[in-house]
Image (tube, rainbow, N blue to C red; front, side, top):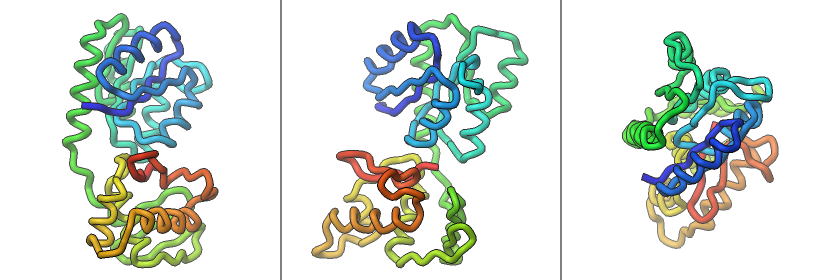
Length: 229
């Protein structure tokens, strides 16, 4: 199954080998060799699986990245890589939120098998519908129909509320314009995909710090939109 992966590894040779291996399976792979840069990237794009080396430059370890993304609500797969094989290292990785652990040197086929296993779990997991969510300075209480930003009431139209709720409930996943039209506008006649784009633009003006460079409501070119924490 095709997926988006983030490979966080500072050894360029390993990055090239694993990148080529994963792309050969049809996956889209981004990489970073710096801990803080990797943390920023993980929050900007909806990755299905993070592959994290434990020892990284940039002031953050793989453990710290793992803990931080889980705290932000990331529910994709996380595979830790390390040159150390002590039991305590594996325990630390699992306690910070990792799903699996692989000790270097490892067989490439084993890494592929572990990634595929994580993808099966990620794609099979049903996301629990969100009743209330906080992101950035925005709090959205869908159960009450109440929204605020920086503690001040935020006015959303009924369609904006439905659109935001749909994307939040499919957080980390790309939702096509056609799917949005079907679920939010119930396939009303004379409603076009452009309607979705307009409502997304309006929502961004209300919830994003910079609508022109959105952090939460992301455009996936040629596919649709995705909500990312």
